[in-house]
Image (tube, rainbow, N blue to C red; front, top):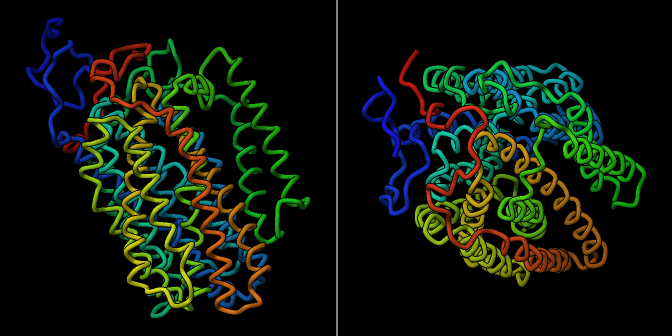
Length: 528
C-alpha cells in the first residue's frame, strides 16, 4: 500500500477512502458510514415532495378541472406537461453535476420544484397551472438522478445493497401514500393544498442541503470530460446530444401518454410522436457512439453485462413488476366500489410489505449478489399479483391485503437488487451517466407499461363489462394475468445481473481520468 501524502489527516470517513484494497482485506462493516447516512437523510428529505407528486395530483385532477372550468382533454395536460418536462431534463443531470457541483445543482433543482409548487397552488386558470406544472417537472426531473449519483459516489461503490435498501424505502412508500394524502386534502381542504403541502418540506430540505452538501471544490474528479481537470465549471455540454435526446424522450412519453385517450396504439396522435421519438433516439445513439468526448449520456456503459441487464429489467418492469401499480387503484375503485381515499388506504399494505424485508434484502444483495435477490423479488411480486387475477366480487379484502404485503416485499427486493446491480463495478465518473440512463429507462418503461396495460384493460372491459360488477372483476382478472405473464419475460434480463458481488477492490475497476476518487470527498460537511 502507498504511504499517505505529507500533511494528510490520519483518518478519513469511509466515503472518502480510496476504494482499492488488497486481497484479503477486512470485510465491509455491517452499517453504513455515518457521513453517508447523513447525506442520505438530507437528499431523501428533499426528494420526498417529488416522489409524492408522482401520485398525489392524479386523484385531484377531476376536482381541479371542475374548479377551473376546463375540459377533460385540457386538464390532462396538468399531468402530461409535468411528465414531459420531468423526462426531458433527466439527461441534463450528469452534465449539471459536473458543471456546477452537487450542492448548487441540488439546491437549484429543489428551488425550482418549490417555486413550481407555490405557483401551481396559486394558479388562476388552467393555462397558468399547466405552465407552472412544467416548471415543477423541471425541478423534479433533476432531483431523482442527482440523489442516486450523489449517494452512490459518497459510498465509494461499497455496500450497494444496504445503500439501495436505505434509498428505496421512501421511493417505494411515498408514492403509495400519495392517493391517501390527496384524498384527505380533497375531502377537507382546497385542491390547492395538493401543491402547498410541498412547501414546508422543500424549505427544510433547502436549508439542510445548503448546510450539509459538499460545495464545488468537493466534486468528483473526472466527472464530465475525460482529460479535463475534473473540477466543476469545466464540463462541456453536448449540444447536439441535447437537441436529439431531450425531444426524443418528449416524443416517446407524449405518444405513450396519448394511448389511453386514443383507445390504442394505431392512431396518428400516438404513432407520429412515438415515431419521431424513435428516429431522434436513433440519431442520438449514432452521435453518442461516434463522439470523441463524453456525450450527454454515455452509452458505453451498456458494454457492462450487469448494467445492461439492470436497465433492461427496469424497462420491462413497467409491464411486469410495476405494471399492476396502475391497475390496483382502478381495480379497487371500479370493481370493488371504493372511493379514491379508500383505494389509497387499501394500498397501504403494499407499502408495509416494501418496508419489512429491506434490511435483510440489502445484506443479502451485498452477500449473494443482485441476481438471486432480484429473481426472488420478481417471483414474490408475481405471487402477490395472482390473487388479484383470481379475485371475484366476494373475495375478502383481508386476503387481498395479505397478497399486497407479499407483492410489496417482492417489489422492494427487486428494486434494491436492480439498483445495486446497475451501479456495481462502475467508476466514479460513470455514475452520473448511469443515474441518467436508469431513470430514462424507468420513465419510458413505466409509460410504455401503463400504455400497454390500459389497452389490455380497455379490451377486456369492452368484452366483459356488460356483465356488471362480476364482468368488471373478470376484466381486471384477465389483465392481472397479463401482468403475471409479463413477469416471465422480466426473468431473462435478471439473469444478466451478477451472481456474486465484486470485492471492494474490484468495484471500481475504471479509475477517474484525472485523480483518484479518494481526493474527491463527497461526504456531507457539517457547516460552511
